[in-house]
Image 1 (cartoon, rainbow, N blue to C red):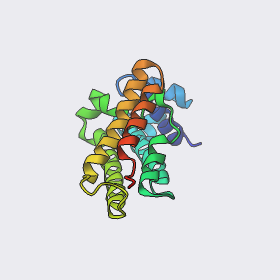
Image 2: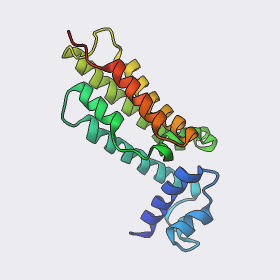
Image 3: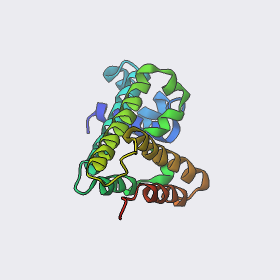
Length: 187
C-alpha cells in the first residue's frame, strides 16, 4: 500500500475511533508507519487528509448499502436486507459518528460527504418504498421520504442505543420493530 493510501486508511480508522480532535497528525503518522514529512508531502494538512478519509468512508458506505438495496428481492426484502446486514453495531457507524463531531459539523467541507451520503441513502430507500407502493406491497398512504428517514434514524439511533448499553440487542430490537411496521399487508 502506498504512503498516501496508508495515511488515508489510518486517518479513517482514527476518525472512527477518536473523532477529529483526537486524531492528531502524530497519531496518523504512527498508525500509517509514515515519516514525519509524508503527510504534508501528500496532503495540505490534517483537514485535507481528513477530507480524503471522510470521502473514502462515505463512498464505502454508499457502495455497501447499494450492494444490498440494489440486490434481489421485493422492496420489503431489500429494505430488510439493508437493516439486517452484517454490522459492527457496538463500534457504531463510521459516517454517522462523524455527525457527533463538532469539528466535522462546523466545517462545511468536512460535513459535505457525510450529508451527501445520508441524503443519497434516504433517496435510495425512498425510491424503494415508492416502488413497493406501486407494486401494492406497501400501503398507498406511506410517504417514501418519511419511511426512508425512519429507516436511517432506526439504524443510526440503534447504533447509539447499542453503544450505550454495550449490547447489540437494542439495535436488533429497533430493526425488528421497524420491520414489523413495514411488513407488507396481507389480505
